[in-house]
Image (tube, rainbow, N blue to C red; front, side, top):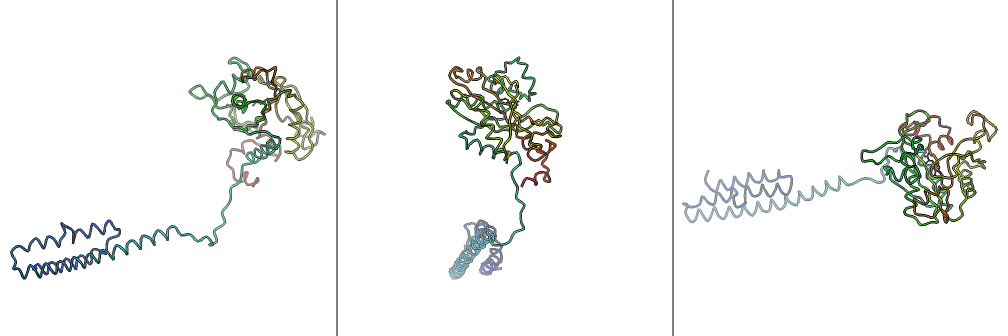
Length: 342
Ligand code: DAH
């Protein structure tokens, strides 16, 4: 093959090979194989040495033409690649907003979350703020500052999951009372919903993970009457009817006096039935007046400030409202159960 034939064959080869480039990068690489500094065309020109001037001229001219032609080929291939890439992008990002879709099942709020939001609305309408706290708590916030000393027998009422660093999974939302006293200036009214944990054997009425809403109001001359009134508003709105309440003494180290608040049975209206075990009353929530030691540890003078507190168990409330007989449904992830509350 003489040199002019070589030039022609480079042109032919390039015209077949260059269009196989998929990307601009590849195209540049392939282009250099033919018309780059170290490309095939240059290596032909390096062989011109011994030829006559006419031959050099003729081959040089043809090589220039081929180079220009290939340059043009590369340019048009580059445009083509760019266009294809844009089309691909447009195609991949395109979606038809009007196209009917297979109807998708919507999720819904868990019944406990629903009742939590409802209760939050009720308290916000009475001027309470909503507070939050962490699920891993210090022993101080969960027990010590709530008047459970380290050897206090009442600690046994709450079987606790301890974390290796000495902290614990909060056993009640009452820990947020301590946080409230630390950060808020009285008078204040807060509720604090949250998940709590106890080392419990799980059965139809016991869970190791459940939900509470804590309430705390601190101010001047706050009495049990303020507490009962607040609870009455809450319960009437939750149960959508007038419910009677009664207080029985109850013991919690962080309230004095402490109470168990019962409501007239929502099923038999107090006449006596299987749900209330013929008593006409349902035990609903513990509450009381904030213990002076708790106020003191929170930096307040108990002669100046008083308050009430309560702890509402959300799981039991939802169970009462919907007649659910097994607490284990709540964390079961069972869609047949959950779909009833959509
Ligand atoms: N934290 C208590 C518990 O989980 C419930 C409780 C009792 C909360 C009395 C209160 C209260 O705020 O005043 O067993």
